[in-house]
Image (cartoon, rainbow, N blue to C red; front, top):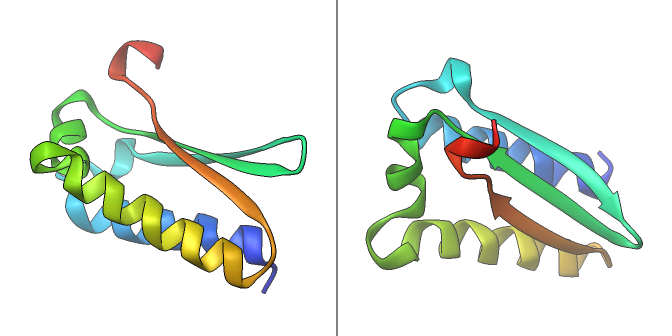
Length: 86
């Protein structure tokens, strides 16, 4: 499986397991130069669950995505889009 797709699938899997409205969640993948950019969109009520206390949950998700990317020789960013951006 291509590394970018594997990271996308990982992010979708983890996010859906954390939230209450999985039908309203999506992970968008874009390329920004040589960097893969993943934007996580959520129902407004679910953002806090993904962010976690003090940002620890989203930080852990980012760390795992970055570690996987480094093993595959690619660069990634993971962003959580605010509910007003929908």
